Amino acid sequence: MSVLVGKKAPNFNAAACVKGQIVENFTLDQFLGDKYVVLFFYPKDFTFVCPTELIAFQDALGQFEERNVQVIGCSTDTEQCHWAWVNTPRKQGGIEGVEYPIVADTNKTISSAYDVLTGDYDIDVDGSLVASGELVAYRGLFLIDKEGVVRHQIVNDLPLGRSIAEAIRMVDALQHFEQFGEVCPMNWEKGKEAMNATHEGVAEYLSK
Image (cartoon, rainbow, N blue to C red; front, side):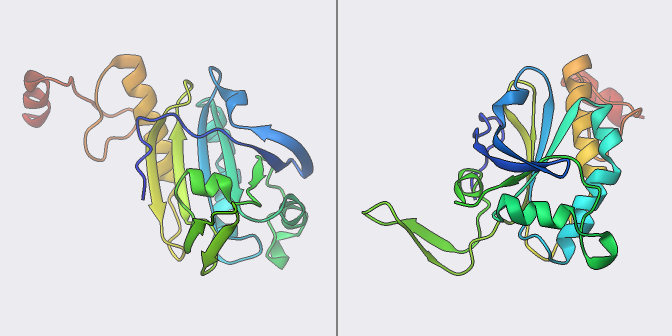
């Protein structure tokens, strides 16, 4: 599994479902210099853990927006499948009401670039994809700063749902560091004391 933290987030240009409409040529770079991005991958539309995550991100969308964060979902399903899922009522297993972009990684290049693709695969000499096992995305999440650099990543196995609270906590920690230059210790939350990255700073923090 690649560690992308500290590196430029791989750009992509793909179709996406945005506010219930299909949009062509959706790019990551459109947010450069303007917004933070939380890009999360999930295995499949119309499945089980996945709708709980996508709906949770929608329910918390206001908290991300007030922090100037663009939320983007991505799976290897087609944009038409995303559209159908977004337009399916929740009582039927759909995610009706989800408005943030859901990118269609149909050719699996985005999941591959972020190294969250399951299964074993390789590129044959003729350029074709040779795979064994199902190629879907693990539950990867990447926090990308306004300069397009990955500052946090986490990857869960398929059965393990993520935490919205933790994603927001990491945004808060990054923004606190950027604003004040202080580092954020274990279990730090917005409003709690951080520390200066010096021997004196950690000594003062631990003494409390």
